[in-house]
Each structure stands twice: as C-alpha cells, then as structure tokens.
Image (cartoon, rainbow, N blue to C red; front, top):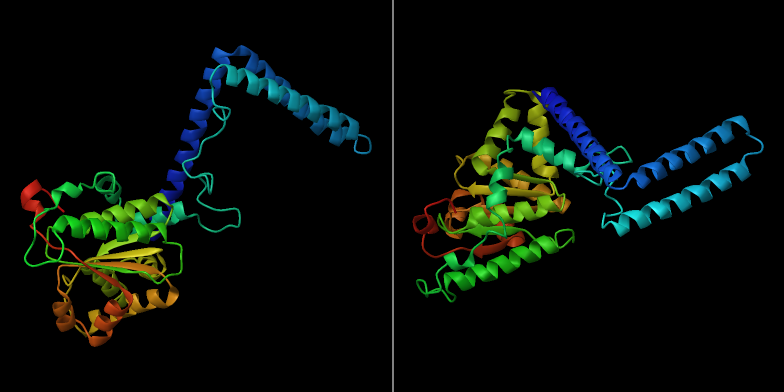
Length: 331
C-alpha cells in the first residue's frame, strides 16, 4: 500500500511536468503566430548559444572573445524580444515554464534533496485518505465564512453575543495563522456544543496554512486512535502505519477534531497525552476541537492531559444556536 502510494504520487508529478510543458509550448506557439519576429529572435539566441558551446570545445585555449561576442549578442536579442512582447502587452514571462510549486519546480524535491512540502502534503492526503478535504476547503474557508450567520442577540448570560464572540475568535485564529512560524507556543482549543462553527473554522485555518505550504494533518480523535491501534497491533501495511504515526508528531499543524468521540481508556489516554505532549516539547502547533465542556474533559481524561491542555492551549468557547438547523448544512 505505501509503495503503491509513492508510485502513484511520482506519476502525478510526472503528469504535472508534462502538462505544464505542453502548456508552455502552447503559449510559445501562440506568441510566434502573433509576432513572427520573436520566433526568429529565439532561433538567433539558440544559434549564439550553440556557437559558445562549439567555441569551448573546438578552441579550448582561445575562446574568450567568441564567448564575449556571443553573450553581447544574446543580451541585445533578449532586449529586442522584451521590447516586442511589451509592445504587444504580453507578460515577459509568458513563454516561460510555469510550475504548480515554485519551490521544487514540480519535482517534489528541493535542491538539497529533501522532500518539498507540496510532496509531503500530498503524501499526507493519500496516507490519511484526505483527498476529499481539498473539495471541502474550497467551500469552507475564510472567504466563504459568513459572520452574519451568528446571532447578535444576548445568549444565556454570556458577556458577548454569539456574533461578537465569533468576531473575537476569528481574530485570534487569524493571528494564529499570521504568527504561525513564530515560536510562541500558541495552540488552540475549540469547545462548545455541535453546530456552532468549530469544524468550519478548523477548515478555514487548514486552508490558510495549506496555501502557505504548511503540512497539515486533520483527523478526528476516533480516526487517530484507529491509526495508533493499527500500528500497535500490526494491522495493515506496516510502512503506511509507521508513516501515519510519524505524521501525528511531525506535521506543522495537527488538528484533532471531535476529541471525546473515541473510546477513553488507559491506552487512549496515554497515547493522546504522548501526541500532545511531544508536539508541545517540539514546538509543533496543535488545534483541538471538542463538544465537551472543560468539566467533562477533566472527568474523561487524566489530570496530566487536562492540565497540559488548559496550560498550553488557548481555550475558545463557542456558543449560540445550532447553525445547522438554521442553514441546513454542516457547521
């Protein structure tokens, strides 16, 4: 399974490169049809480059003058080409190869041989079967977030209305995103009953950080415990299980949704504490979303987990009417 996944991703990158090269060739032909003089200029540039190469091979002891002249010619030709493109309102980089990821130029690897974050995130998506999240995040992000869905009427003795509270929470989340690369130890705890926007806001944050090329793992607590159990008891593909397990600790951001839906026992308590605590020690950021109240968290989990969460996480309470009934969807 793991090797098959890597093979599929490698093929995806090859298709990306092929697609982008074909698109580049299409743009080149378009420019050549529109401005034939540019095609002639490109031919002259290639000839000058070939002349330099031949000079180095055929005249290894006396090629400096040929190289100098060829370089001067190429610069003049490039300036002439730029003038013609500008005059025709064509961007100067229009004929160049465009990449989906500028960091690795669609190879999946950086110059130092390390995996690019775009490759890491694709591996995350496939390892956790998260491919559908891309479609979800297109619908659920800060651009589609509607603050007017939240009531501006007082709610059950709370100091702020649900809308005022959500404006405050969104501001904190935006600060979390903007300062994500700072070693400030900031982690977020979303708590409140269902249908108040916790999952939607998690999606907003995930989308913003994915757009910044960060590695985001977004899973329910129940699914995370399944991954941990599969690894512990040797179920399924070992390489895949090991990889999924490592990502829980190494991802730039781990979002644990629906904490409390998993079966709480000694094993699950120990594993959740290990994940949260290890990430805290490494300076890795985490968001936890739960329908539980702080009191319920303290009753279900050990004192170590409870104290660690409320000591190192910024608790943000969601309250108001269940939005799912009002807008007929998932929030």
